[in-house]
Every structure is written in C-alpha cells, then in structure tokens.
Length: 240
Image (cartoon, rainbow, N blue to C red; front, side, top):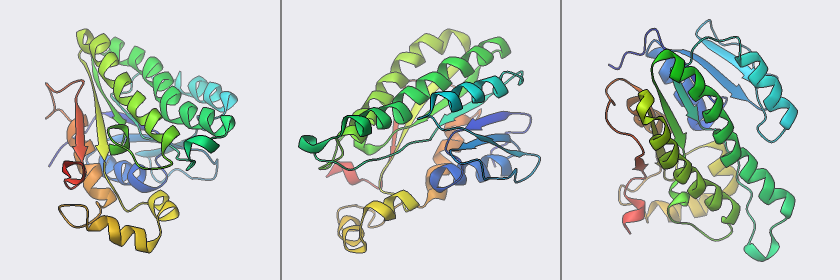
C-alpha cells in the first residue's frame, strides 16, 4: 500500500474519467485532494475531497481559482489532468478550436505548474505529474490540435523538470493509451473500439483505475529519482 497521509494534492479535471479515478485512489491512500471541474455543480465529497471550480479556457475562472488557492500554505502533489479533444482534419481546423485546445491542454498546465511550484519550493519539494497521451508521441487522423498540445506537454515536462530539480521537485509525464472513459466512448463508436482492441497487444482498453495506479506511484515517495520522464501505459499499442 502506498501511503500519502499528510500530503495535499491538486488534481485538475477530477470529476470524471481518469481524473476521478485518481481523486478516489489518492484520497483512499490518505491524501487530502483538491480537485477541479469546469462546472460549479460538484459538491465536496468528503473532508478529504474538496472541489474547486476551474475552467482553463476562461481567463476569469483561472484568475479566481488562483485567488482561492493563495490561501493554501502548501500543495505537495500537482496532477495536470484536465484536457479536451476536438476532432478536425488539418484543412478544416477552426482557429477558435485550435486556441481552446492549446489553452486547456498546454497553457493551463504551464500556469498551474508555475504557481504551484512556488509553493513547493517554499515547502522543500513536491511531485508534479502531467497527463499527456500516446497521441503526444504518435497520432491518428484529425488529432492535430490534441497531438500538438500533448506533445507540447511532454516538452514542458522535460524543461520544467530541469528548472525544478534543484528544489527537490520531480516532474514527469504519464501517457495513457486507449482507456475506457466518457471522452473515449464519445469519440469512438463501438465498432471502432472493437477494431482498436485487436491492435493492442494486451487485447483490451485500460480501465481508469489502472492508469490511476501508475499516477499514484509517480506521485508517491516511492518515486524519488525519476524526473523528466515519459511513462507510457498503453498495453503495448505503440510497439506496433
């Protein structure tokens, strides 16, 4: 069992999918978890699961969030998980959609890392995990903005790992493969999912809990020497 007792984590995009699985797992490991979502409808689940509204696509929401966050003395773990995907071929990309994906998937993590790392420096260290994607390493048709943003997130991971290493802050990226989330099932048909399973050496999609367990390790004290690394959890998909 990994014990995160006494630590506080901030997980963006924690109301569904992989994010929610991480919130639940981190909290069950003794961590106090602050999690975010775009809609101000979520209620605090318990004293150890605290919801704060944050829409990374809206400047006012980001400003208000950082204002509320300033009252917290320390955050030990940051997981940049919030992300969006808009499917468009390169010849039809709308400028507004391109900017929105980059704002949420890349600029948002930069802003959170910039601000939270200041707290981590003062407290003597921390763990930062960026949830990228195998589409930041390879891609598929019509994933232009998504792949660009996730590849950029890997670059941000490596550069910020170098900047923050002197302060005992490790920064890593986790690249999930095909995972059974609401986002996945909204983009892929049942037929496409079944076809993709045949391309995955392990023969199935990941569960959100499986990805959350990898994240837990990377954010725990068991990970004391890995930084600037890109960890792929994809059932072997990119090997083919």
